[in-house]
Image (cartoon, rainbow over all chains, first blue to last red; front, side, top):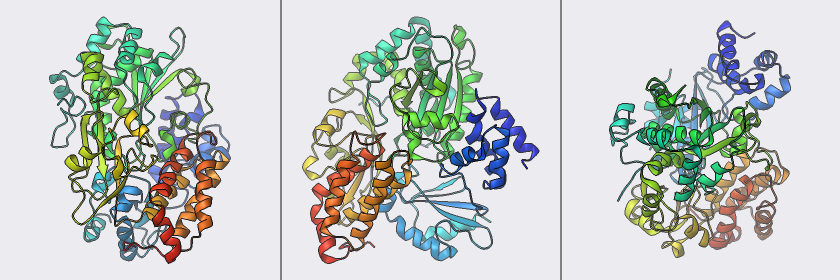
Length: 154
Length: 424
């Protein structure tokens, strides 16, 4: 069931658009903001609110890289794996993260603290390699920076 | 040397605030336009300047605007494409974070030219700081009377909204962007009808790149002749160029259109890092053909780069050095394109993962000469005219040129049955 806050925020979005369906992505963002991810139940709840079929909402939810259809940890690490970061050695950063966290791409640490995901170009190629943790961007990262970066996220 | 787009961006990296922007002449172009020019005259002025779109395709901006029907009732839309997601591209981030009002002023003038009443900034998810800066700038512009009803006391109204995306390269393609803004999957639409006639929610819509729109206030203030005089070549204006990879000073610079690749790489980017040799470059982002040291004196404008066999694209270059494996480099690119294909048309959905797998096999020393033929065939089958949009043909550009310029590297992977480079 959607929470009162979610319903209120989605209702606000519905007032901005000419057809209900057009609020689909905003609705997914709102629910993910509250719950970290989009469950089957959330897909059905959003569908009901926007007069869409669940399949239609799910087709949108699964299309976008940053709508999560599986649970994620409290913090999501997005490691840029595109070309400038490749040239500047992101693969070594990835290896170091795997060793520090004992998880691979798409996995979450057992304490639910971190999920590690690859991400397409973060648009900061002159400061490669780069990664984001939640909303924070880290640039020109070296392997030795990683413990300090991770320590900030509990 | 004039740098109209970036000269007022504080060196601290902080965004230019509304009062600071006004102090250097900000919003004077809008004032002038609303007082002196008809919408048609604005479009004519942009057409006269021959401003070409800075998002990658290089189409005439004034021409694009002129296709919007003027005698229609109902809403029209103006959209700034701030979904910068072409790998190796980081130029619009600079403008968004540094001078948000320049973009807003350009958008308001563009909206006036096509008589749009609603505008959107479509910004990619990852640009968190830019989104905060733009949110504040939009609020400040409303408070100062540059947005909303009766803008500057005139009979013109415009609402502005920031939309942040949820991550997909396809959103940068203008018709896919429109679908995404309608809450749908970001798949491209058939053209015609073109968005100028039937775009967002079926209404006339213009989508322009951030750098393109940021130029509009300057062209209104100083005119087309001034714009053309900034450039070294027939393609007018300055351009934001960028260089990334193993150079001494990676970065972005606003320079006259038509600066040579050599000047960019050697003077601005400070040359290759010690011990490394230049082998090639993607001149305008991931979906452009490689150029090599034979092309260093190519002028970086739309015509010059095209004549050399590539595209100016976004003007942000990625450098390949002699200690990075070209096969691994191209595999990285095709992995990106295969992942970001929207899956809507078959050649792209099936062909890109195939090229990615072949390149991985080659990189791992499991490739054969027949694989090279298969890659060549793919560059044809996924080329222009065979797919629904430009994603797959763009993906084939670095592949076809790598097969041409770095053939010996591909063959060595087959002969040695391993990657000859040390970086793995």
